[in-house]
Image (cartoon, rainbow, N blue to C red; front, side, top):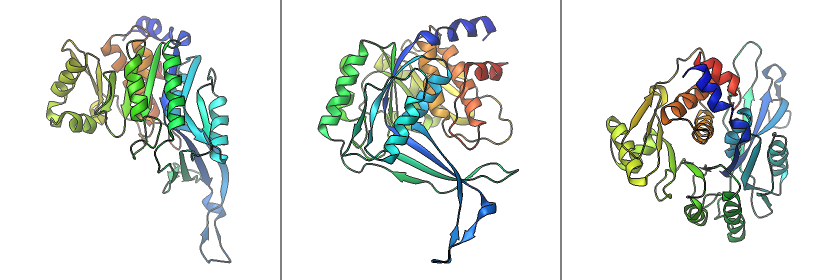
Amino acid sequence: MNLSRFEEITSRYSELRIAVVGDYSCDRYLEIDPSKEELSIETNLAVHNITNVRAQPGASGTVLNNLVALGVTELWPVGFCGSDGEGFELQRAIEALHGVKMDYFFENENQHTFTYCKPIVMEEGQSPRELSRLDSKNWHITPGPLQEQMAGAIKELARKVDAMIVLDQVDEPETGVVTPLVLSTINEIRDQTLIIGDSRKGLKGWPDIIYKMNESELIKLTGKPATMAKDAASQLAQESGQPVFVTLAEDGMIGATPNSEVFHSPALSVKGEIDIVGAGDAVTANLATAMISGSEISEALELANAAASVVIHKLGTTGNASIEEIESSLD
């Protein structure tokens, strides 16, 4: 992609209005200084002293972070948190993001805030080293009235936004934002705006929207082996009438169109240590912004691949990629 085309596409990002529907987590990083380790008098166990705590929006919040980094100035998160300390931290972190409107982000006293608590060892001269994570989730079906609030938000936003990103992050069915009611509502409004969906449980049963998935999710959905990834993606795109994007880890990414075209974008070279956390969300954000800004499928793939390359080289955090960083990555 030449510079003038890159600038033509990305110059439109500041005018976009995007809703991000999905599970928002509070990513709490507990930075541990190993030089300050002590021994507990009471238990005789090691005490790991935390010298800094930082909280940032994770899961769907990572998509939101990437959209902010891309310069999108009107963003609508649709999701929920609990009436707890993590919920306070999460809302404060989201509200601090430029251009975010909180009208459709709901606090609910019956819910726990979805939280990834990440102890991370910060040792001078060493790369950050993450320890076992401590997660907080909801283990019950999302309350009906809360589901209805989010479904109503989706209907209202369909008339206001240029695109809607839907991200299902939870493992237990119906315990997060993307429930059958929400999917049914998305199906009702799918002709009103561009919608791209991604789910860690796979996209079986989802409406015919733009699908973004990884290779294992494609295999699970279509039943075809990895050697037939291009054919499987192409068939899926033809059946749904929507583009299909599949990430292939170190092999890059493919994009299939409903008219049987399949494009492949190779992964960029890796330089030094990497951390793949957040790369998929950067891909989703960049695919959405590129497509609603008039890119071809092949161009959207190239931009998303470059963004993923930027993100994986950021250690000790769930990173994002700015337009400037993406441009440098493409040079």
